[in-house]
Length: 409
Ligand SMILES: Cc1cc2nc3c(=O)[nH]c(=O)nc-3n(C[C@H](O)[C@H](O)[C@H](O)COP(=O)(O)OP(=O)(O)OC[C@H]3O[C@@H](n4cnc5c(N)ncnc54)[C@H](O)[C@@H]3O)c2cc1C
Image 1 (cartoon, rainbow, N blue to C red):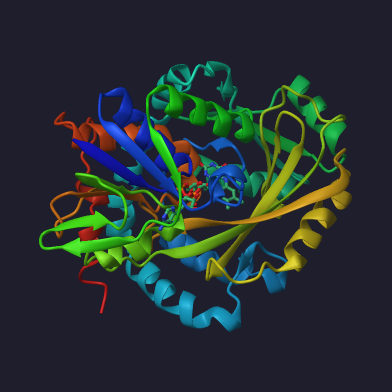
Image 2 (cartoon, protein in one colour):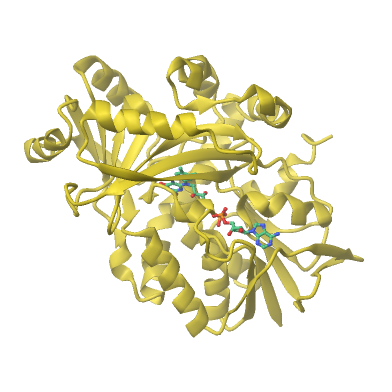
């Protein structure tokens, strides 16, 4: 039996590797060809096990006016793309009832608890165990009032298996050496980081090749064939759609209407020589940015811009990231490399992982929103369980794509 995986981001690669390691003959088809534009290769590197609360929540809805880009915040709803984000926003509202929020939290809690153990196994299989760093992360604030509000928020939040405490004197001194704007900080334990995304991509490629996975650089076109699906030009008995924001088109070809939106984020990368190599990611919460040290760069990332994946980037976001660096006084030196990528997000902020009810040989794993890096390894294992006859260790019913059937026209 052969399997074709559509998509070679971190989720597609994790799925392909898990299947190949269980003896399946796998072809992975990726349109990007490793050009680094996919979200998987420009994200913040944070294994965010603490983010149990889905962003589809009453609190998120209440916070929208304060978070808008035009008011200095991180959320942008460009008017020119209202036709894209308005239907999504309505579905998000419908998914943000207290009942659905509780159910979503319960579903994410299980996935996130399994995330880092699964990463340990995946990294070991790719011979890069050192890429999974489990030293937590920091959240910092510029004054006592914002720290008190921020800490109260985290105390009230469900952080799953992650825990936090006030940063100790030594940690605070390190953070203050990076920015005089750090008045207070907390340190999480139980979260982590992928030490370098470029090395991760290379290691996964090498592991895929070693496991016999054939990789094809192309845009896969799915066609319906009775109760099954096929990919033009590729022979495969079973197909997995794991194409990030590109998943809606193949899923539509199979008869599933999928309300995915591109939640675009931006980063700048500068020289790393003055940033400590061993410092875990730092979130500057009042500015909604996260700073991550990679092997040879420091990355500053942020923004949630809802719209079309293919729309031109908005250079004002890179300019604002550079302004944050300057105002915080961070030791990150330009010239900066600028990047923008799309988080693949569904209105209830849960991923879609499962088997199609429309086509017997179709499986899917996409819609991982802000958590795709964190959840890639566990997603790979769950899809492999589903396809190789093992019972998935986690109940996948909350992630079935048919949950949107009633919401779609
Ligand atoms: C600024 C930013 C910061 C982030 N920070 C974090 C973080 O710290 N931690 C975290 O867990 N997550 C983070 N994320 C989210 C995370 O990056 C994504 O959820 C994750 O990368 C999604 O991975 P993916 O493999 O599903 O999709 P992608 O990375 O988008 O990969 C999909 C691939 O499929 C290919 N493709 C699409 N359509 C087709 C087709 N028809 N045929 C063949 N190939 C196709 C594309 O070319 C692409 O290579 C962040 C995202 C952004 C933008």
